[in-house]
Amino acid sequence: MKKRGVGLGVSFYGTGYGNGFPDVSNAEVQLLEGGKVGIFVGATEVGQGAKTAMIQIGAEALNMDHKDIVLVSEDTSQMMDSGTAAATRQTYNTGNAVKIACENFNKRLFDLAKVELGLNSTAGLVAQDGDIYLGIFPQKRISYKDLSEKYKDDIIRVVGSFTAQTVKMDDETGQGAPYWPYTFNACMVLVEVDTNTGRVELLKAAFAQDVGRAVNPSLVKGQMDGGFAMSLGYTLFEDLALENGVMKNRKFSKYLLPTSMDMIDVENIIIEDPESTAPYGAKGIGEPVTIPIGPAILNAIYDASGVRIFNLPVTPEKLMKALRESEESEAI
Amino acid sequence: MTLNQVYNGSSIQQVMELLKEYKEDAKIIAGGTDIVVAMREGKLAPKVLIDISKIEDLSEIKVERDSIEIGAGVTYTQLVENGAFGKNLKGLIKACSMVGSPQIRNKGTIGGNIANAAPAADSIPPLIALGARLKIGSTRGYREVLLEDYFQKLKDHGLRNDELLISIGFMKAKDKEILSFSKLGLRKALAISRATISMLIGIDNGIIHNIVVASGSIGKFPMREIEVEKSLLGRSIDEDILDLAVDSLQESMDKRLEGRSTLPYKRRAIVSLLEEALRESNIYRSEVKL
Image 1 (cartoon, rainbow over the protein chains, first blue to last red):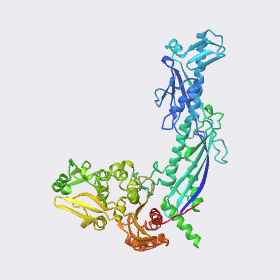
Image 2: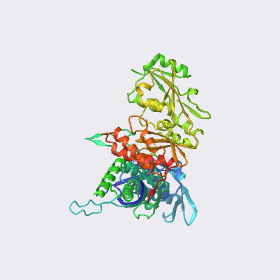
Image 3: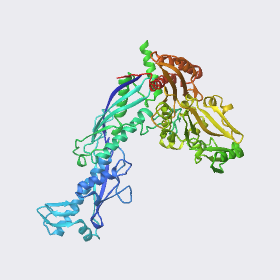
């Protein structure tokens, strides 16, 4: 018989290295030949979209088109360290470093513009689309291109650094402030359990993720889909089948990953509640998007079949065994 | 032994002559979806491969008034996209469309599925249910064998090392007959079948007047399920036909798979497979409990 059930999973997640561990990101911004701006930052792209997000944050801070920004990344000979692409930390931590570096860069260019434009102060200067001009008298302006030519022997390169402060938890009391910021999410699924085969089929899913602010909504939804598919895999399919330390399912015909046919269209809901310490409010979501899906599926299986599974993955054979045992105990 | 020659077969006759020449040193390759894997894993190490994928005579589906003949080199995709397998043969289409992935279906062939003789081969139960016959040829001549018998006595009926599987033929299902197929896989694509069932059922005035049932992966090879057929033949569709089918198949499985660790799971899983097959035959309605 086929039985349907609904399940909800919620989670909150502290991002960054946390627990008092030093967490520092650096970025450098340089005026390039021809007036383009280079952002040198060690944010490793592992498919999560770091390169896109860093350019977007830079473009916002520099108030210029992303096409005039050159991102240089993943080369330790050319840039300072920004820590690992891990702990859901690049958008928040390194994004902050990029924003600070860009702000420092603008300040530096304002100082130069003051001299070049014969002003007595940088007050009222505006940076926009590769030009610096005086807000009350826009004819008074100089382009980045002109500045780059005038200062070609004197490299204009500035640093921005961001440190995330956290407090190690007290071993005795468990007190402390181990992470900042936290991100929140919730997932709800509708499943159908075949009580003869033990197969669990996902029919519908909604997934809401707090991102502070979505730097790039398409990338956020992509990460949510990816996190959902990974969780679906470890919840229902992926089984190493270790026996005395030997992996029995050591090929992909046996170690089952969900295929595109097993994935469903998830209704992704982006929750924007800007985080005050974040670059334009944006928080990372890389790891948290994998967390509430498993519990949601397990709760839905329970709702459908009355059986609680505490050991992943929920293979058909495991679920059938649990169903048989619950039927037997009911019969007694 | 290493592979040192690959022939690009141009005709059935040429392939049969090559097989006569090289015998056990040669293997036929069509789509290569099984043999290439087996060679990489070192399970097979032929000296000579004979590629039959470009032989047109082997890649045709011949539709006559009452019968259909499928060339051994016809791919799953070719079969699925062929219009000849209309309404009442949809079980064969369904089985072929559930094989592996699009890439495998584009390369893998019906003949290869049979020649490889895997217990989980998806296309075979529906062909057994249709009473398919294999046409096998060699320079010694041609022979025909019932697909059902082929697996039953592989030693007697199986392909000899000089023989080529040429085609698979069967009579079209009659208007009142429906061929169904149901499969238990552990995911929705690229899933090796844990169990499959195919039924050809003819109904007349609410009575099951003819029925052939075949299974895959619930025995050492794909086979007829004669006891299930007996339990349903002559029954009215208003009776508890699902229970009858389940009881008889479970009884057969208990004997066949005695002591196997997979038996407790499979004997219950087939309830859903039988239910799906009967539902597709339009003689059973199942419910979903909310």
